[in-house]
Image (cartoon, rainbow, N blue to C red; front, top):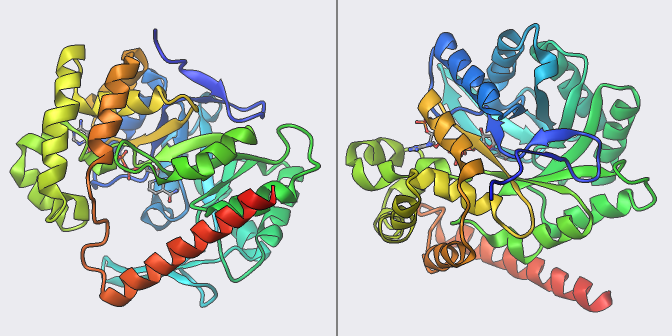
Length: 364
Ligand SMILES: NC(=O)c1ccc[n+]([C@@H]2O[C@H](COP(=O)([O-])OP(=O)(O)OC[C@H]3O[C@@H](n4cnc5c(N)ncnc54)[C@H](OP(=O)(O)O)[C@@H]3O)[C@@H](O)[C@H]2O)c1
């Protein structure tokens, strides 16, 4: 049986494509090629487009505004707020040099900044509303309730239709849900966006069940692990080397075991079904018992078609379970260059989060 191509986002009246087109873009292409990939995505049915002010520092939204002129009503625009690179407020998320300019990106969910983010996105995207506006990364220096309050005001003004969150911890999700406890169905947060794939399943322990119990739409980003869950990862050493500069999955100690899992578990299933390995990685997500909507990137029309084929790639339960087992057995180090202190700090943070989950569980 094929997977449904469209669904309502959570309890809202917003209908989205269940495969969402990720506009972040890992590979720089010229405007005409990017427009062809976007057209191929819309034609294939991936009409919901995930974007953010952060992507190429506004340039991706500006491209979408140009490319979608005259056909805004054929797509659903899902954008974000809460990261800025023009001020001193907020914890630093990362810093990089681009075209000779040093950019420091900070979490900034102050209400005035959120309003500015939305106004700027609307101008770049050449539209009068966002279908979904998500807090990209929470700003832990201000109450989450203040940020949500501003999003509600923007919704009341018609500038955004629905609001969502991304990259929140379980306790932050609980804060959002509590903020909207008395809201009518579809009027609280609509969605949760997080990293979720065959290889990254941490959210299954807490946020995904919480989201489902609260009828939120779950948007899964980086579903192909940036291309690691593909045939090419096994056969193209030159490409792995190229990617290894920016992505730790493509270098030691991860590349060996991951390559073996893709070759021994994912590719045989794909071969049986007659589709590429990346299509199976998406079909696995579409077949999850608690529905998730993958947000998938592509910079070629061929990749778009392979992604769309996931809708017509039914995965038997036994195949889905054996894939889950094969990838769960892998020990992946997402931050191989982390110092001992960073590792210790992360471990303490995970233990504290686990403690607070357990306390909340026993208080229920
Ligand atoms: N909320 C957040 O914090 C957050 C974070 C990350 C991403 N996102 C969203 O999620 C979207 C997708 O994320 P992502 O780009 O990190 O991950 P992804 O979808 O897992 O990876 C996309 C990349 O995989 C490569 N790929 C696709 N099919 C392939 C194939 N058959 N063989 C080899 N490589 C293949 C493509 O590389 P090529 O470019 O070479 O085609 C593509 O750019 C983003 O565009 C963004 O909208 C959100």
